[in-house]
Image (tube, rainbow over all chains, first blue to last red; front, side, top):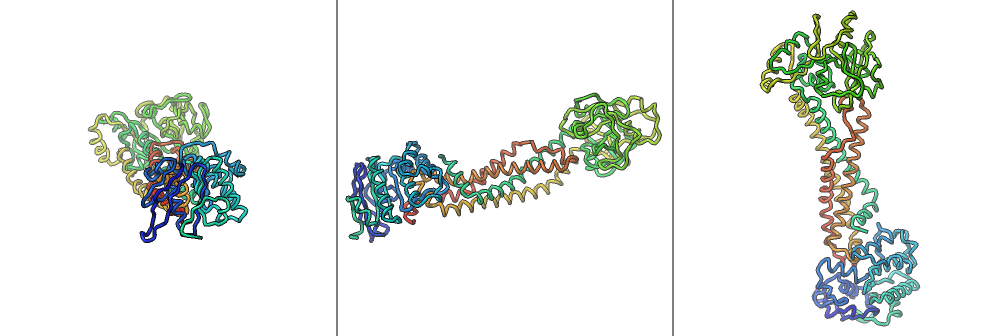
Length: 211
Length: 407
């Protein structure tokens, strides 16, 4: 079992609690978390990613209860085991594509030797030395995927990765995420409100009632 | 990739703001560098040049002027004193040694100083060529003089009347160079040394060739039956009591004035001190403004960078690493400011020295590096840490989930 989220409870206001189902995924599993804006799906993602401590319940990743980790231990664990892809690429602009990936390696103090193979695989190897402002949106998205994968995470989380893309590109990104997750035997969770993704991942949970 | 490189990348991503902050801090530190260099070298040179001289006696006037003209050879002499008075003083039991000086001529701006061999001994001068003077009109050149005017042993030249600016030339008596001094690093480097007799005979209207061939006095005063004058006397005390009694004794005699180099120089530094303090204050204000500039730059950039910081956290960076990231940015900035400042300071001194190849400033060297300059680096690091502390704390507290959700 790679991921188990159990009895998670979270609220900003105790009258409006988020309904968060238990989640468990094995290595290589893929899941879609779908829901309207404001339904709390990003909150779920943040809780699973170890970015937001739930009021109660536990998140266990690869046997480690992540909220029992302290401060920088959790940061290192996250860097090593969880790859996060955001709606916008959020490449660090002062760094080149390659340096963005090196930074991910640096923060977990490991050289995974993944930078070149990943860039080649995602078709952006020739942009290695490029800066973010010279990349197209699609390329930037692929860089952010590469960066999420460079530390060989056991769990990949994607937050609205297709929101700003057209149908063709959206399908391509989802397919890319799926193949990469399969290749490295990582569990994949895509959080989205985008109905188009549903066709690709049958295993889904719906948050905040029917769409 | 490492923390320093990461901070560096963020700095060069904003070359204008980074450059401006470095320059501003550099200017403030450059002023301090120049002050430190000048102060140290002046003080060093001044103590070195005055070493072994307990008292200077000359004509009445400004005591500081007497010291500056007779010890450092930078001001005009106060006038001449009677040889008889001078010789009377040498018999005083409180006087251990007395060196007469005769000033008044120059060659291409370099002062010709009439004295005896004790003056060479006072600074333990050594020769790179030739020997000391033995007869009238034989001279020894200081190292720098020889280098600048390009003359060597055996060459002759004609001295000019006056100090610094010449009125007329003493073309009747060419000087013959018998020796060149090794580089001394003191006032001798810029002097042309000869005997008291040479200075006297140069100014005589009639010429007595017999005396011009006679050997000169190598110690004490030349023996003469004429009414002669010298410019000043450098005196060494026989014992500590002399320091109390001798100046009072001399100053009470109407024709002479005694001045102590150490006292006058500390008075001079006291006078200069006000100016130095003022400039120092200005430098500190500039440094504070530079520090504020760095603080504002970091603080502002943080607003745009909150997202970057949150992303770094998702990649595995700890809060402390973000803190370090911002502090490093401030410290790298200020270290560069310090290096630029020290460089500008030395460059400024090079230009200053180049534009004044004679006089007090020309004795300075820009190729000297002092321990105090390391302190500048230290101060700069402190400024960097202080300026980046608050922004770094903000970075430390970045709420990742909130930042990432805000998008």
